[in-house]
Image (cartoon, rainbow, N blue to C red; front, side, top):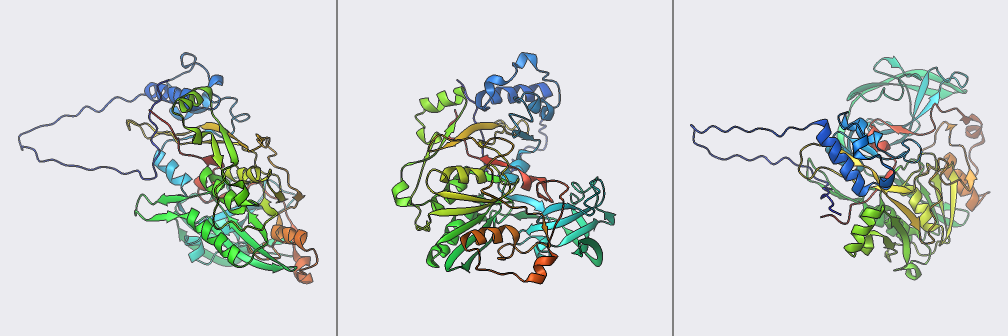
Amino acid sequence: MNFKKIIFTLLVSSLLFACKKDLTETTTTTPPVVTNATVNTWIHQTMSNYYFWSTKMPALSSTNVNIDPMKYFTSILYDYGNTDRFSWIDSSSTDLIDGINGFNKILGVKINAFLVDNAKPDGDIALVVAYVLKGSPAEKSGIKRGDIILNVDGQTVNARNYSTILQNETLTLGFGLFSNNTFNVIDKSLKLTKVELQTNPILIDTVINWSGKKVGYLAYSQFIGYVKNRLTGQEYNFDDSLRARFAGFKSKGVNELIVDLRYNGGGYVSSSNLLTNLMVKDIAARENNVMNKKVYNAAYTEYLTKQNDKTSFITKFQNEANNIGNLSRVFILTSNSTASASELIINNLKPFMEVILVGEHTYGKNVGSFTITDEKKRWNYGLQPITFKITNSLDQSDYGTVNGFLPTYEVNDNVLPYKLLGDPSETLLKAALNIIGPVAYKSNATLQSLKTTRKLAQPKAFSDNKNLDRQDMFEQPRGHQ
């Protein structure tokens, strides 16, 4: 089968060149004519090559190739919204690639939307900060987890505008407090402008002495490995940052581990596999044994088989020097936003050690994708279709439903006021710690009495830039011709 070459690059640059010409010379260039039909024919052919459910697609002749490519892409997906809840297209491949590498124009906040009045789902909304990204305008202005935003640019946040009210580039945020089970406006506002920022996915790591144990805690927001900023050229290796954090855990004698993935919607499979290698029990015994397996459509499977590209199908454990080494179990904090590459961690580890989930059920995504752009650069569309399904070493992959993985211990995270991530009294962390040692920590009784469970306007936390809320796992395609 003749496969088109896929361009997958972390750096998108414009090549400007000039040449000296005789002043009398005239040059005329006729740009190629690009029509919806041209783009959509390319989309269909590309999807036929790589789309996981390619045999379920309609034939090209039965589709309307003259419609907008954004609509055309979704029109050929298999059982869109149900079986395929995940494939997507971006009119800018540059923005798409930036987003999956954590480079976006942002304030740097993740938000949970709470009802101001539990009895009025169509009423006002309180935006409660779930976390703040390092180096962001939000962090530099002093915003922290638990802060409450009640109005933006003079508008009260409500059920009609809360999901879009943070989209402007410059925003004036008006704050409030939560006391006596009530949200109240206070005399505090901040004017902030979004900046282009590379996400540091490690929100916090710390070691907690608890009930005679040394408990490592890591809050991790996105699986990002090595990236190079396309504007500045600066290089980041967040995989090495992960290794360094686990080296710290190991040197401090950590013997229990809590990984907070409640806000982690996924990212690169390679980084998910790295975290698996850093946590798994008896890594030396696992080395070179199967960690997970990928399944592709028949056409791409045939092509990879002909290329003898076995590594595209099977990933094996690697003996990471910073594997903690003494863990018999791991605690993972979860929510409905825990998705894809985060769920892959859980599935990778289950055959080899006890995995204890604390929180809510996960998103339910056991399939992944890679980015496809036009090699001839005739258009800038970026496709992110589902291209593979992934199983663990036992061929298990039964979490691809709307309920995902069910928690071992179901804990409601809608408790106000929020505590900082890493604080032993923070709701989900405290629940995990109390499983490790139920009588080790007694929080202040007065503070406990002030905590109140509130209703959310939507189950998932969201960011001030939608690119940060993608729920996916990505890999770079191994073969093309």
